[in-house]
Image 1 (cartoon, rainbow, N blue to C red):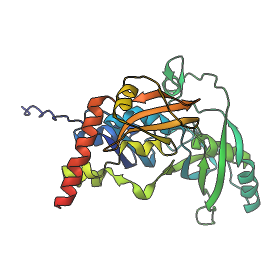
Image 2: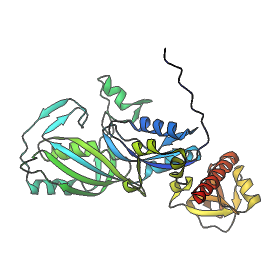
Image 3: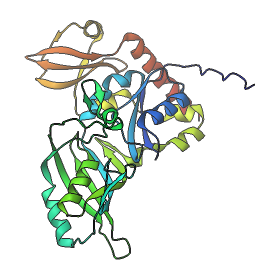
Image 4: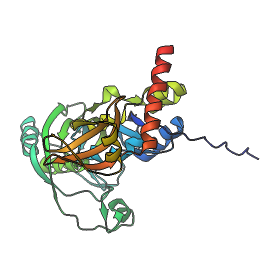
Length: 325
């Protein structure tokens, strides 16, 4: 008989790790692996990447999970390879082949299509996506062979750049870089570009190189994370407030900070601001978020006193460990 598997003793961990998601892992599988390695009590991510996609996946631990939704609105940058001439059921390499067409595409054709798909465009979300319809993800309907009606959505392609043109040696591969707004489906973009070129296409590779202010050079691989010591893993944690870049900063004195944490509005000479990160004075500690209207600071997402104390203790411990080394 196999010996019973030892249970991992969980602990409070607060902060963000930038993971380079490996090929073949779902976002949740990668998250759960990292969570287990850090022995973290609570974890979440800031938006899914398909199993066939790699790249930047911010992982949030502890108090950072309260602000992970804010990062869903971040602009993204992707590198993708379109396989021209073959259309699949999922618009990527995992799907069944639906049709094959000859590829007779010129440089001018590609330049025309690049211009056509740059700027505000309309997309119909793919059936193989996590978008929900009546409480169920679209991919659940797709797996059951059911196609449901989806409303087109407006997204923005800020820049669409060709990295590699098809060649005589590799006539079916078109590699592009896409800078886009939230909610853009790169698989749908690739499929639509293929149709505009008259030959059809699906994605053969997809990599997210940037999300918001986080780039691929800042990321750690799951393999590297696994090879690290516990202290090294904890040392990778970025502070919770990296998710709040662009927020106006407000600092409160002790008594006012306590009232704010209890959900009480505070008055002060602050300019109106929709996004505010609120800190306690003294040893700076993030309290949460809010917004200011007519000189009134209105609480939004708040940390608990326990989360604040744990995050401060973790910061001190990591600082002492670095000084010792």
